[in-house]
Image (cartoon, rainbow, N blue to C red; front, side):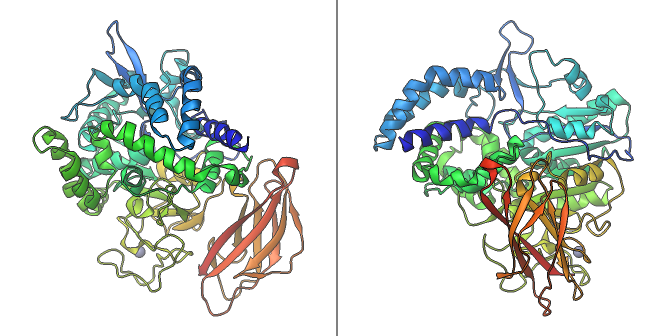
Length: 580
Ligand SMILES: [Zn+2]
């Protein structure tokens, strides 16, 4: 019975992650002194809607997360899938794979690509034209057929400063190579400039959209059309997540973080990390891996974007296994260009764009293990190294000594080492313009009391030149979403640091709804004598805390309970500090 419940729970969770998110609290979002440029918002992988035969009688939406349709489809296939799952669990994998193949056949065929990397069907992304791409148009057409907007909360926050007819959604055909997509983006930027009469645009881009933006800056960054660019969790040099899923090694999902990530995405304070014990981990690992390899891989090899997600070494090795030099010549040509030209030299490309006047900011999560269990620093989905170009020690370790960086920042007055002593930003693509947020779940800014204002200020204003400009936004800080529970800093020192005179630790309750009971605080593993402290939602408390005087990095762990029945399980957050 427990297993059946677990399987149902897993199914629910998987579908919860694609359900629409709840509205975030916008009360604390200030408005900014906007630079007047139209904003182009570029979303992440597989978000954009795809339409077949647009304008023809046979017009049909063939891709786009639509929870209603998905649930309907799932419901009609559920008995077969469940009986397949039961057999899978007893070691017979084939019936489930067959059922899943059947379940996904139409969807997979609709989005198929040809051996030359072009679409099997006549497909465009939506919005297709600039006239239908503004947030104003999209909001007014809410009853229309297509709703192309994700990250609605973030756009809503942006719209407190920028008129909705000056915010545009750019969607591209995410199946294709970024080499093709960046030309599409260039055309779209031209159409926004013409449509609005503006001289320059600002770009906010997420994840795969961030990789697109970096690629665009590499090829077109000196063309004068771009003012501010903020890339949040960009997959600049791909992600090892996909390689882990497609490779032949077993995976070992980090389910605890997955549940946390799910909670952040849903904007719920219902912290169910404890449910990890109920999840049949081995079963899930094997199931996901099998479905990827048996059902999706044969199609994914014709997606230019799948190759763009690989690092140079993996790409070279797998290209020679999976792609035919004649039949797949066009895919290879673009993927070669992406890897050996763009990705190999991306730091030079970004610096050239910067020198030409583009204000580029990168925001990256770090301090989380890769979702598939690989021991790399990541935001769960993308390696911190790929996002930022910084050096990172294997997940869970620190640098034994400062890594040798070739090129990069050599200014001795700069400290580019993370408080965790695991990330060195001196060799990042842009060491002075990359912000690292400890615990930021891949792209999830909408609910984060720190990241959201940072994005808006970087994007909409010219206030922040680099990571040294504003003490409120240091190079390394912590995610502050309600599900993180607590934030802490020393009262006399900027976030993430301490001084020789530090004596007091400030702890903030990040919850929007719950009192927290702090049950323990430890400094470098030694309990501080604080007793229980109750902190109201959004409030702060201070505790005496004197860091070691040798100037070595400090580690503070705060254990807490969310008050209120079901939520009262115990959680903890470990926060790192380095000498100011
Ligand atoms: Zn520097």
